[in-house]
Image 1: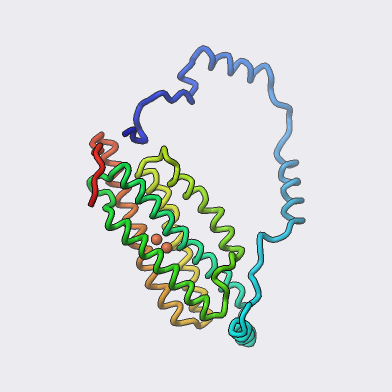
Image 2 (image 1 turned 60 degrees about the vertical axis):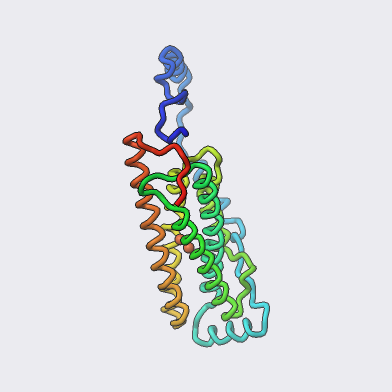
Length: 250
Ligand SMILES: [Fe+2]
Ligand SMILES: [Fe+2]
């Protein structure tokens, strides 16, 4: 199995063809780009940014319970859409988290692990906790009378942000350690999401919610720490060229 640092047929650098590199540099001297700056591009962006619609909206409550809860929050001077938007985001994040771990598990089964790398049981544990978090957020949304099947604007944005992570992990050419590197990005963002939600729930007086979110935060801290440890051990193994070639199961 080729690791990420194998020497191979990489031809992207100029050193691979000194003669052609010289020619290339000659062309850049003969055809200098016209004078100018990026201000036109910036102006065009500003025009677009100022004139487009938002990426989405939070749906109005679709149930009597939701309408009543919403009215109650409004009396307290709260804007319930902010919490619902962020809950929708975390819900989407946890659901994606389950899928990310499933994809990492497939990579684990195909390529194996290394000493100090993940075991199948650990990956399964993290995946199951993401699923439990998803269900917990869903229950809180239902209690607020919100629709957990609706994609909120923040959920939409989070999905776009995480799309690079998903692409990296499901790419057939990436190694397990490269997939874990992407997973670490997701875990860090996941943790940030919980911390923002804890703050919001505390501020709005949703104590039970804040308690549940703190328990989730604790689990996410551990997820991130594990992934960091696995990556560190893998990198050292890679550097010492001791990566085991046969698939290892826990
Ligand atoms: Fe999570
Ligand atoms: Fe996590």
